[in-house]
Length: 194
Figure 1: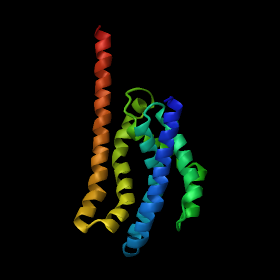
Figure 2 (figure 1 turned 30 degrees about the horizontal axis):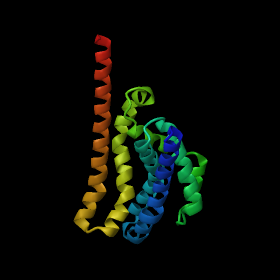
Figure 3 (figure 1 turned 180 degrees about the vertical axis):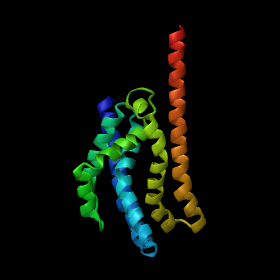
Figure 4 (figure 1 turned 90 degrees about the vertical axis):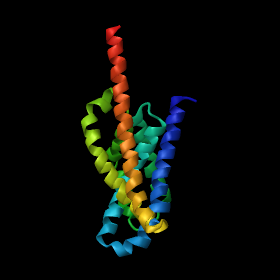
């Protein structure tokens, strides 16, 4: 299978997953539990808005790590097309305007940066920013998945899922990226000594 086909498949999976998560899982749950939360519902709605392109970039980048940023841009295009064709929610006009305006493109690229494990290129130059942004990405993810978690899971388990799963994922991602960087540095040192 060619790299372009794999990139297209990764972009479609990432883009459709982001839009379907918001439409089919997060938005109905937020409508149900958000009435009790008042301002908490606003933060969850904003997190879902931000989370959609980030999720598309993360999934596309995990599936296709070569030319990861181009794949994330393609996933952003797919999530935008899917949102226009598929999403019917209270903040649809704002969401589509946000996606079309281009403000969400940096979020898709940020999702790709979070999963970029290479020790060269942009991942190396932006390594400090990436390492600092795992916590922010975790908080955005937590507030995006909190309504579905509270809606469909029992209370003590729902809080663990909403906080524990994103925290575990981003800790794993940070460890994976550090390990890949250390392995690349060791390989580079071996080549210099031979």
